[in-house]
Image (cartoon, rainbow, N blue to C red; front, side, top):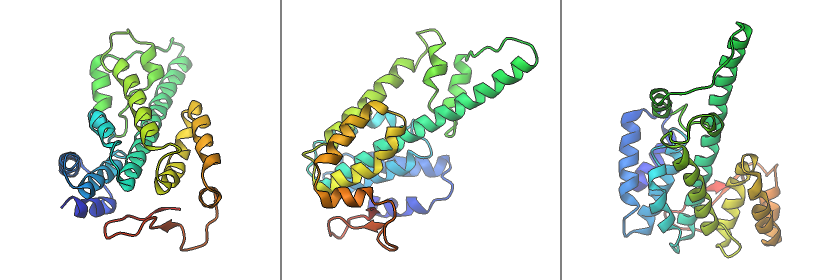
Length: 239
């Protein structure tokens, strides 16, 4: 069942709350399945859901971290994709929110009043409930009192995400996992510059054949995706 959902979720053009709950509930339950295929497909579903609303997935990070000890290369690869999607959409939501705050400040300045960037708890809650505005901006929150709920927890979640990534993506990871990690984590470097050194260390140590395909920005038509390891349930990944 979760395998079917992992295919169908890619065809959803608009994931509303009802659909999100359906996919999320089944994906969450599959993470504890004795089947490695079910665990892998559950993480794959969560990776797609993270693009709509990543905040619902954040409480699952401790469980995801346990799965990093799994021996299945594709499960580890899907965990990397999940973490990448969360971090990218987290930062995009923060950027959009900061732009909104900037526009409000410009209007206030134009009207001759001193702009105030201040959010009460009700407004924070409202933003968190909106999938497009979820992930409250750290810069905006830093201007708030230190006891605002969620500020310290948000920082901890970023630490957890990188702990998960470092456990699954390293020089000892399976070659297919390394290749997928290099492809999907490249966009994370735009937001977390400190991670560049670790990323480059792996990129420079992998075999030339993998590195050349990762760095190929103009692949031949029809080779953009491939199955890294043949199997009845293996997915295709961007090359």
